Length: 219
Image 1 (cartoon, rainbow, N blue to C red):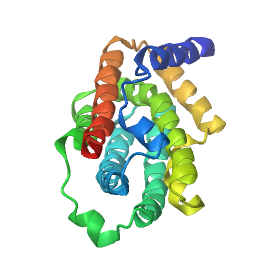
Image 2: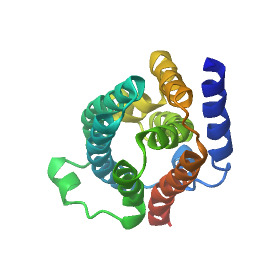
Image 3: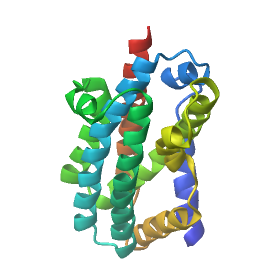
């Protein structure tokens, strides 16, 4: 039975993975062509994303009926807290202090992702939200790995400056096993993923909107 949950996650991640050229910002960073001001905007927008997602994950944890799902959402919330501290170092490397990050005027295209994730916490079942969120992780982790390397290679960022992206790019086998366990619990209780896949497709689209909104600033 465990294999079915693992296959489900692998299949959905593969189906929802964006095309090679769908994300227009990451290649600009990889080549060193993204201006530092755009990286600063990325840091400031991510600050709002992280603080919103932190609350969203805690809300989903409170709603979840499956123990493993509750544990996953709680761990995700804790991870956002860790990431927020690392994000401050990335912002500083981009030349932004705390006040500058707070003063940044958010862009709708960048904030659609956390807004939709919060919508899922209010309107979607936690089991559906779980798959939608996990389906998005593969692409997000890959983007972070590419950005972290480019920041070192082209922008001269040190380990503190890249730590935010390294954090999300580093696989955590124990967490990945827990994700499979949580999905399996849902399947064993009769849950079906049809609605969740639609949620995941939208969530992935909103993430691309985040990156591409920032890519437009580099033009």
